[in-house]
Amino acid sequence: VQLVQSGSEVKKPGASVNISCRASGYTFTNYYIHWVRQAPGQGLEWMGVFNPSSGNSRSAQKFQGRVTVTRDTSTTTVYMELSSLRSDDTAVYFCASQSFDYWGQGTLVTVSS
Amino acid sequence: EIVLTQSPATLSLSPGERATLSCRASQNVSNYLGWFQQKPGQAPRLLIYDASNRAPGIPARFSGSGSGTDFTLTISSLEPEDFAVYYCQQRRNRPLGLTFGPGTKVDIK
Image (cartoon, rainbow over all chains, first blue to last red; front, side, top):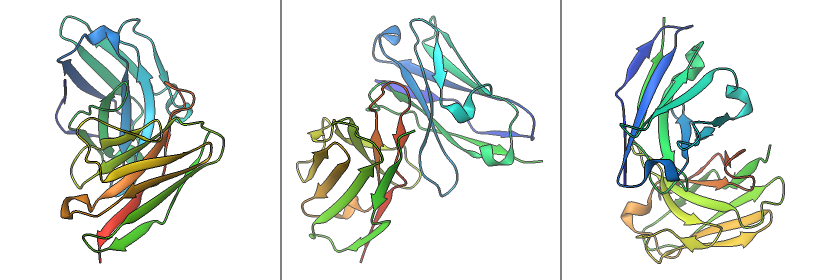
């Protein structure tokens, strides 16, 4: 099992960022994908969960309205878009498998004017 | 939202010593509690799931216990590679409403 994420991003406040997470080594539609972020020097924050089979996602309350998750089953890739970026969205964003036993390598998103 | 509290914030120990880390939940999470290890620049690594089950490949020196609101991660004899930050996570309402604790840093005394 592998989860491979897209590379670092630098965005301006108010912009959106799209992070990809390509899954391999298992049946893509059988397991949920979670998104977790970590601000510099801080702890882990669960953002939400995505069902690749149905295409439905649920976000933690603080991210509702700002997070959109989609997938491409042909490439077994999940995409997480975070909109209306603020400086405090600067963080490393991780995708993780349903049971958190596999993680992507993380994607650093820097929000700066 | 279920809030997790971890103590101590920092644990300073020497290799070979025993480490005892605590995680307390603001509500009953049954046994839906996991522990993760994270080293600088790396993704977290699952150590323990469902309070007391070691994840595949995790050494036997790591053990978890507890249920309800009080949980413990024990490292029986610290190896040099065990110095890291440890997070607990509850998943009582999985797959929704998951939360992590603030972490305990285990550093070298």
